[in-house]
Length: 269
Length: 328
Image (cartoon, rainbow over all chains, first blue to last red; front, side, top):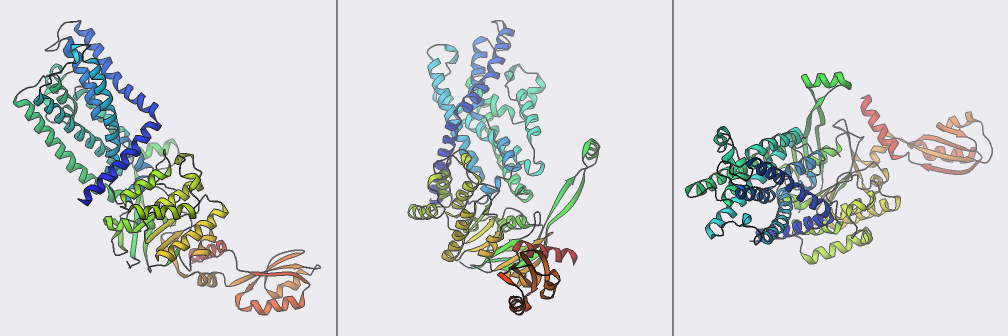
């Protein structure tokens, strides 16, 4: 119990601090958020012009709009920038300040992520609510079980994608610089996560790969739930696969962190 | 809480990638990477008793910071044993972290974009410091280190010295009883250096804290440490009383004279080694054992107007200790 209340105090403190930093750099935060919207909007525009108002595969105009809006929504909520932050902390040796104190570095990082996610989440929900009466393109099914599966899928995607990038960042224990590796993963993810096109429209060999990489489950899957492209057992199976990936990434986190600390050379000073 | 610091045959070796300068070197290292092992710390042993303040001295790259990082649990040793306050540092137990602190003049735990007071508050949560104790300690630190005007400014707007003061406060809020100070007075002006020294001394006396300190300012060492450990090339050539170090490596004092009228330089040679003579001033190095005898002779035989006897500067003594080891 006292452990929990300690953790609560630490999280609320860190979150207040990250909120203060977010406000300090509100311009930066605003542009970061806007930047995240550009790629889905451009991709949407391309698909709209390709489909010419008709249907491609099972997607008509309304489907495309809802699909890319959902991509925008989910990808902002599941974004993780920790790989870059961890690289800086490793390279400059500032990680030391966290290692010396009796509270995991992970709490500091997670608190930051939570603050930005809560902020983006609230802003986007408000925008969605405003758009609701204006266009039926944004009106998704509000059936409780459906909503519950969407929330679950987004939460699982958040956690998995978060740990994925966190783990990539920790490769810095061995390589010091991880930017190139993260860039490569980003490029692959662009294609395999469903960011460029709905999975249903991708070539068969890409579809065949979906179970073997985490990318679809971190973005495409929650979006397919929002756009009701999946139903029945496929929903629960998908959630199960998400859990499997999460467990895998947690195990990888523990291994990398333990091994990494032994490699840590506490640069400089 | 007892147990000080016990270090036995401690080593840390780094594998370093090396390449030659220039394009050729870059291409060569692309094809074939060559590594060499740097023995940053090589088989050192020492013990520090609880409540002791020890100066840890050595030139840049001697292994001071590497040793401190191993003692505080940041680095995993390549070999040997370390015990700090009854703990093995690298296990990074919470109970261990609550008893120690490492202050690095070059590194900061302060959060860059917001005022230092926020770092103090997060440390209160992390170290589970009760409100009353937090307020009391904060009040003391604010007064002693003159923090009041700094508390509301974002850390990035503080000067190096101001940041160092906040850093010290953040590191000592949880009242650790084992403290590693790596260049704690760096960037401070002379007055503030003095304040920080006094503060460290008081802290040591009040909490019986064990302190290991590195500094490039000899005044820090002479003011705070009876004992010094010298490290060079990862080895410890000297561990003992500061006075003994001076006696071993600088077994002489320096007499500084001001003459009322010119004297013949050759007349000075019989008192000791003449380091410098330019009328009206002279400095003469005299073996410690002969100081009082030679001093009275000089006063009797020479037209002395002013006369002082000084220890050689600490920098020189340390330099001589390093040189002695290089020669050995």
